[in-house]
Image (cartoon, rainbow, N blue to C red; front, side):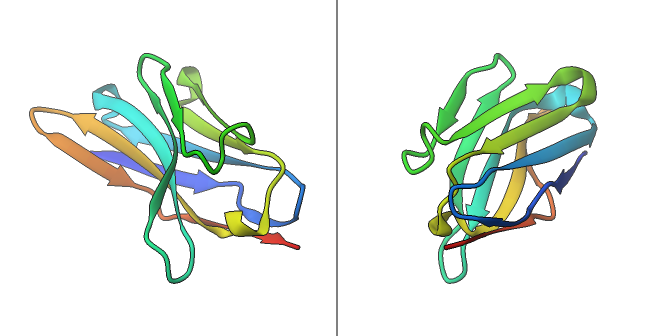
Length: 118
């Protein structure tokens, strides 16, 4: 079992920055990749960024060059640095962990609201 807790959301003006954090606990040894997803009102949840245990990163086209995903293994934390924020980045951001422990498991945090005003 993996438990994820996000923090760092808030209200920011367009062009501003925020950094989201996701702390993992529990069976962290089983985690193979972590990432951030977001869901805006009336829209489907979409992947924003991901990072594998080996450090390979991947980004949605809409955030490339503006968002950076990173991790601190000593703190069991994954970060999402968001720069040059746009109103269309407004959404609830969810941390996700994929873990393998005999089977593949997907774990989700509770979400943190990011609101970008124009």
